Amino acid sequence: MNQTATAQTEISTQAAGGIRLHGLAKSYRGPQGPIRAVRGIDVSIAAGETVALLGPNGAGKSTTIDMLLGLSEPDGGTVSVFGRPPRESVDAGLVGAMLQTGGLIRDLSVRELVAMMASLYPNPMGVDEALEVTGLKAIAGQRTHKLSGGQTQRVRFALAIVCNPELLVLDEPTVALDVEGRREFWSIMREFAARGKTVLFATHYLEEADANADRAILMAHGRIVADGPTTEIKARVGRRTLRATLPDIDPSRLAGLPGVASAERHGDAVILSCVDSDQSIRALLTQYPAAKDIEIAGGSLEEAFLELTGEPDADEPELVAR
Amino acid sequence: MNGIAYTRFELLRTFRNRRFLLFALGFPLVFFWLIAAPQHNKIISGTGLTYATYYMVSLASFGTMMSMISTGARIAGERQTGWTRQLRISPLSVRAYFRAKVLTGYGMALSSLLVLYISGSLLGVSLPAGRWLGMTGLIMIGLLPFAALGVLVGHLVNTDSVGPLMGGLVSILAFLSGTWFAITSGFLHAFGQFLPSWWLVQARNVALDGHAWSARGWITVAAWTAILTAGAAWAYRRDTAKV
Image 1: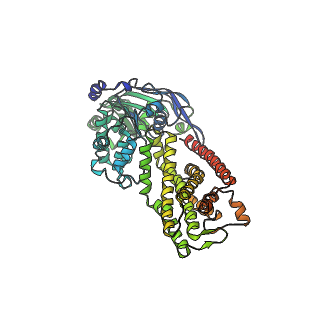
Image 2 (image 1 turned 60 degrees about the vertical axis):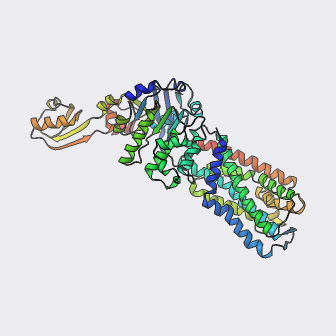
């Protein structure tokens, strides 16, 4: 957060205007008729912000990113990147991106590949600097087809930042990585963001959004269902479900326990939706020692989103069926 | 922006690729020596050319066709890995991308040609400088349809089928165009003249009198270039419309 405050002062005039998506919509032809991947979203991101685009698979994150980068044309609405259409910002070298899928071309060394990418841009950072930032110095001479998964992702990251972009877009950059690889990746990303860059990354992990972004935009079924500081979002969707066998107790009494947001009964079982499950379980066991078969599960983002979106859409029969 | 550096890296990649070295350079070279070396000074009847001259140009046409069409394999590979999408979010224009690909194809073709010229010279092919240049020029022009064909194939086929397709196509074209044996009359002779590869092989006649293509040759090559370029543009648009 405070990174952003200091960064704001360093933002170049080129980046003025930030990112604006207005009424953005996109449909695809699917096997069972059109799929409305993005259904009219409005987003405004100030220069220098680090924003997570959070949502389950199929939420419309990648489709949104494709339109933001000018890879696909919206059916409706407009995209403006630093006050211009995406293609112009890309041509001006203001945008770097790591797409969700994408391999590296072979028969070049890491350094050569990064240099090749740098050669396409008007004002790239030095190849050495890009290798330094991404921790690739030690393997700069290796051929690109002989790298590990983590190394490949770091090279892809280097390719995205070597143009020295004002906006960096990352579409689920850590999906293929192990825990250590993730930690490393995000620390490199944060270092780059601290230079006053605008960063937008898509993820379906709440923890990644929480740890690496100032703000999270939640998408589900092509719509934005929440948009705010990550702390706030986490409080809203970070609920856990506590399930216990506990007959003959009125759920409304359980709903009053500390940390519990709501409670309901299913036969002998009670299901508590908890904001703070640690507090809730202590209180539950103290006050109702008869409770047994206790399970605590992290609420999936999907569930949290459904809760936030409220009524399922009329034109989404598969949700009604669930 | 700077397509020159991009082209340079493309060339570098290509010459590090073993498969290319094998098929576009090694294969024609081996066949040239196998076929032409034992009787290199003998004249092949009906052509007025020695074995060395005849097979030098024939196998050069094979190697250079392979070089140009293999652009398709590289494009197909880059589409499949998602590299094409990565390039589309860079300032590199579509035009510069294809220019680099075609120039790389020509770079490969020239090296294939050079290797065979050297081998030919070693087996007694001796031409005035002007004829070497004239022959090279005709081959370069004759490769234009294949440059377009490479782009077309690259956007039409996936990486699994691009290899067999290229191999099969080039083999058939080579057979019908007189690469392996002289076709001087009959149906094959009449039919072959409709193929762009026929005129590529005909570039060998520069060695005889400095003149190789009739008006028909020029028209055939121009027509194929136009048709295949239109096809390549269509395939590219169809491919990128899918995102």
